[in-house]
Length: 323
Image (cartoon, rainbow, N blue to C red; front, side, top):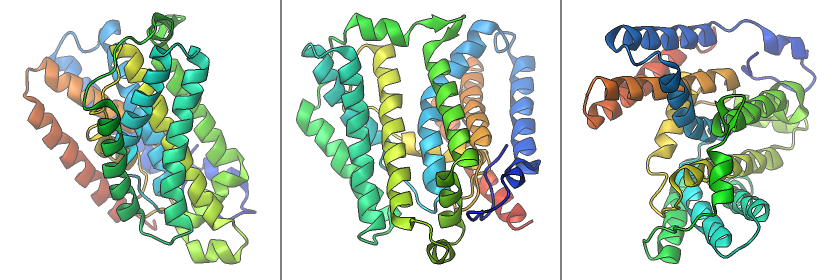
C-alpha cells in the first residue's frame, strides 16, 4: 500500500503492496503519542476532540499530499503557503462579488494550478533548482496577495459556501471527507497509473527515467500543478471555517507539509514515499499540537517538537535507505 523505491515503468504492480516497516513505525509513533496524551488528559480521547484533531489536520494533510508527490519526484515546494493565500483572496473576491460558489471554487483551484505551473515550468524547462524557484515563488505569491488586498482580510464569504465546509456527512465533518477522497485519489494515482510510476522513476533516477522514455519534464510540471491545486483546496477549507480570507494565511504551511511527508516515510532525496504515511504524519502533528495545548504547554515548544520530529524522521530515513 505504499509508493517507494525507484520503480520504473513495466514493474509488477504487486511490488508496490509489499509490507513497509517504515509505515509500521509511523503507525507505532502515532499510537504512542495518542496513548500518552490519552493518559495525561481525559479530554484527549473524546469523540469531539478526535474529530477536532482530524479536522485541523485536514488542512495540513491536503497540502502534504501534494508535497509528497513533489518530493517523491525529487523536488520541493516552498511556496504552498503563499499559493494558498493568493488563491484564497482572489477566490474570496469572486464569491463576495456574487460569482456562483461552484465557479468561484473552480477559479480558486485554477489559480493554485497556475502557481504550480509557474514553478514546475521553471524547474522542468528552465532547469532551475526547485528550492530556488519555489523560494522565489514564496515571495512572489505572498507579495501578490498582500498587494492585491492592501494587507487587509476579505470578509463577506457567502453562507452557502461556509455551510458546505462546516457541514457533516454521517457525522464526519466535510473537511475530513474531502481529504479522505483526495488521499484515495493520490493513492490510486501512485499505485495504479503510469503517472505514479513516472513520478517514482524521476525521483529515483532522473537520467535512467529519461533513457527509459519517461516524460520527465511533463511529470515534473504535473506534480507542481497538483501541489498548487491542493494548496488552494486547503485554503478553501480554512476560508470556509473562518469566514474570511487573509493575505497572511499559510505561514509555515510548507514546514508542516514537509514534516508530515517526512514523518510518513517520504525521503527528501526523492524516489520513495507513502500516501498513507503522509496522512498518518499529518495526524501525528495534529495530535501532538492538540495534546500539548491541552497540557497548557506554550506554542513555541510545539514548534520545537515539530523540528525535532523532522530531524528524527530524516535520521530514520538515512539509516533505512537502501535496505
